Image 1 (tube, rainbow, N blue to C red):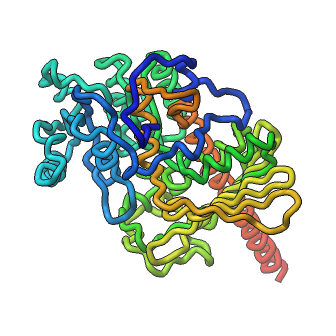
Image 2: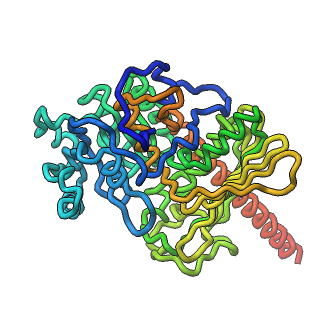
Image 3: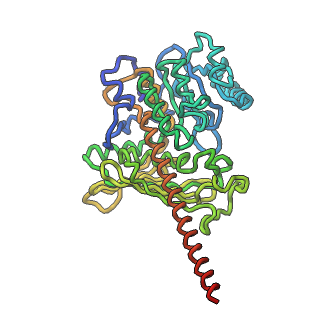
Length: 459
């Protein structure tokens, strides 16, 4: 992390680079990378990274995740401006929707951060940028916030990570989650992308920002300091469906469904504590749109325009075994109205229950320990995991290391692939369950019809 006292110095790392980049974790251990929570400094208390040289960045995607919206706290450009200060130079903004890109760029140029954007050029594609790039525009990092259906594979037009590595070997990448939302048959390609990134030596971080919460890191600290073994994770995610007005979100053929696109954060957080999952053990059930209990009264979109087979489930509930033997469960529901979501994660170990509540807005951690039936409650005002994940990534690019507990990447691309694999396994398991239920219902109906026909024949 950046010091709040004085600008950090740049010097060579004395620890293995793989440790800081989060790329040395394998097996079923839950001992994934962690950061002392006291080092997660609020954005308004962090100093800019020292230096006078420009830090060239390319933004891919001009949507909400990159430039913010009223729907949530995401806004990567805002965090980069605060982390890098006057050093930030966004040399290119790449988005096929050039009018939108130009509009958001103009807003930036009309603000106090004009120095970062006054020379920014808009391009439709990465190839266009490469053809028109001057030597002084060569980027130190790419921030990829384009829709996940256009990345995470080896397919032309959906292989932005591979293309970046081809033309800018070893350049750092920050990639939004989920890593992809393609067909399940393409999951293997995502792991191929991960291997390519790892072999290139690129500093790559995936945007699972809940890992960077102070609350999450305090949970890790409690587990590690007490030598605990996680026995179970219990996650629940209730979204406020009334506020979701993007038709694509309601269409599985475009978003891959709520588990893959939205529930991914809590599947990832579950894995962060529980370790790798035995994918063959995943069991899931769903409540679908055409079942009696599946009616929603305040949808913001016209679902009749979506093919019936592509409409999303209202509820998905899954369980699985971790490789360690621990048990995990996750329930996603699209039931709430209004705007606020309701989300919780419980982590259980011998004598301990760590319960994280409301991580997106105002995280609260309830801790029950041996010897006391009462919970201790921790709050974390002004915590900003979006800033922390960006700050840690940049510190590693800059090779800033003040001590042995310096910045670490908590979500590598390969680890993100395993979360992606789990979300798809949950979706597939729920669809298998539904298909079996429908087949059994159809078979029962056929038997009834045959019985009635036999009775009619006797008469």
